[in-house]
Length: 284
Image (cartoon, rainbow, N blue to C red; front, side):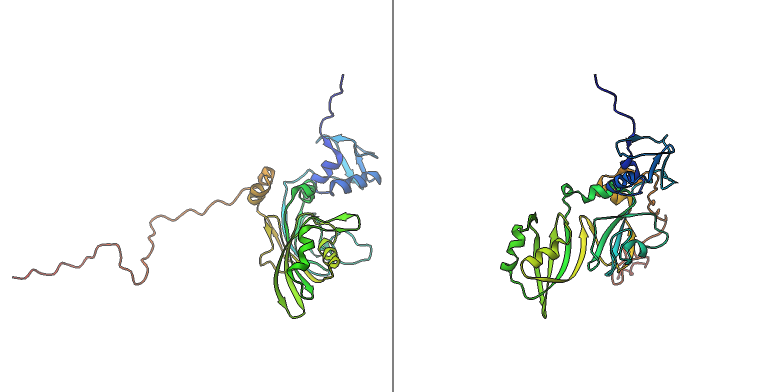
């Protein structure tokens, strides 16, 4: 005889969905005694909750989850991708516009890297996009010191090991030589800590600039450093299958055409309308 499965979802999942933290971070918050359910502090994430439960974190009630949202952010140099830095350095979250809701980053860019960073209010979506099984290609424009040849890059295309850590094969294009530096376009699918810098160092190349230009289907394009753009709910639905992204959000309707307006004929072309000039008189 088996017991019925408790109703609801695991508490860490609910906290992640509400945008409090990622599921893993929520589990750490629970272990630290910061989460209470119906007024009682819990010590284990092995608890299912429903909408009828009262959940608080640090004594503050947890709001109901909003629809999943995502933003593109052009991370400038000099910012760390963390909620709080032990060295007191400025974080990407310090630099976001004040009207932004609480968000989490999908993956990270280190302090000396720049470019596209995805932000979301949904911890479950963050977790999903960070999983290696998602397999999204992340592309970077990389400047290295030196003049590498195609043969120098072969180990990276095959995949290499640094100590006990194995790096998957990289997609690499040698774009151009610019003085003492060379520009490369590199695509990776795992995104391990400082993966490109470490791999380049293994073959004797030093990275002196690294810009992420795309993450899966999302691209940096012409965004300026420090700017934020929200991804439309329809795009989230089409790219990620997130039907919940469009719940409660009305897509703008197409502007109706005004009746009775005709397009003016292009200059130099005869009008399609018949001429109103009288015919020439007949001879004789």
